Length: 638
Image 1 (tube, rainbow, N blue to C red):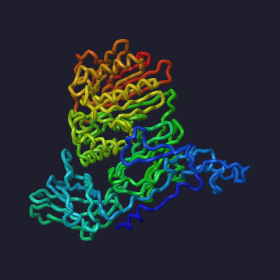
Image 2: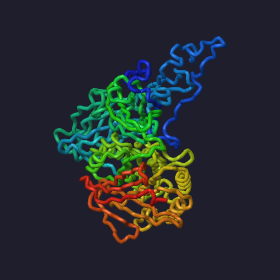
Image 3: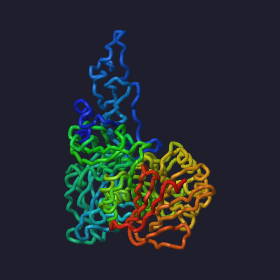
Image 4: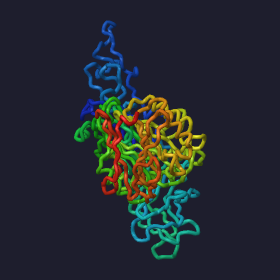
């Protein structure tokens, strides 16, 4: 079975692509990847450009090979050579892998993770059938060997074995000798099984390596004595791969387009196991056919087979195309756009919303029709209410798999923050047990530019799009540990970032509301922190600030009073995307508009090229109808 991993994953592909630069790749690029998220605060990966590797033109007077050879006798290295993605300076200009889509590792294939005699992580994925009475809440177990059985129960709030659903169970830190795992058995747990269960597909991976696969299961488990029900089933063909993948595709979720920069973007995906994934990027969809491989990936079991690749070095404000090759099969193509340069004025459409509880989420079809350049999930992006890693992952898979929402992930640039329900639980703060698990899984399932800083954990970051800068706040991880919603150190980070920003509009995003007049789980619980924010903006002449929030299950347009010497701060609240409404209170003094009659989002049309730049906020319901709007001129924010 270990040999099968080498056959399935170990094919080494060259990223030279027959001379490099084919398929429009002369436009530029560098990429790097991470399984899960980047915690450095610097973004995912760094460009190797400018390193000394293979990069000095020899002096012909010294008797060396001269300008026709800058790579130690390699005839492909000369000023006339085309740069290719391999970590070498072909054109002798002192820069490595510049001007082409590439990754910071030189497009090298590291090969699959090694197979070992001891199994640390067992991942079991099972799909329940859709026929009548196929699902059950009864306790079930999976056994892979004598003494190696596990409960098929995702803890806390997830309901296992729903009709047609995939449940994924990961068991970590095991250290089991591989030879002790020799079968695939499903069985009813002792004292359970009154309702029958019909699993139709299953997959097993050892430390990511696909070990077992079956997608034609025809067994009913139960213990009520029915003729077709059995209390235990062992696959008679053994623990082996009887199919290529138990899922519909090895690409189980994604891709998602994450944070974009002027020279690149982050691309996220999830596979069914540790698979050989090849990413290609080109200037046109047609050019992908012959484009060289930009990145060789092997998503790991430790990150639930998610991976984010940071493609860099591309041209700004430009459409690019990409596809994913998984075990030799091409998936795609899809496209993304790089961000404009920071000094570029123009128009951008940004949409945002919060609170997605319901299974049906048709609002995302309306959002797709509105076609935002950027969509921001700003909290309660699922309602897991748990700090358990397995349960959090299951809820993110559920969320990323909702129809329409799934498609939006690869049509717009996606940014995200959390609030309480997708953090650990209702109204919980920085003292909550499980918050580090929540942070771990958040990083696995989103593709923001960074998460906190090297010194300070959290999900906060800043993202620039031309003359618009977005500050994504973490309103949970540090809440309540001092007199702040976001913690004193994150406040200092925010103040420094605001003071340093020259963006025309500065969008400050919090899952919880800023207003002091409403809601017990908001900045209103920490009035000193809200006052400090308003006063900093006034004292340091920070112009162009607009506050964005969610959480309260209604859309609101507010104008918060400015601090002494400052301007009034607009607060735009967008909630819910897929949840029941709470009613408006029209008597609150800072409330300019409110809508509570449907699911909706707020769309922002921002024009920084106008003589007086404007931000127009529109409350749009699930039918695409505009319910309210507010035009905010830049001249009012200074």
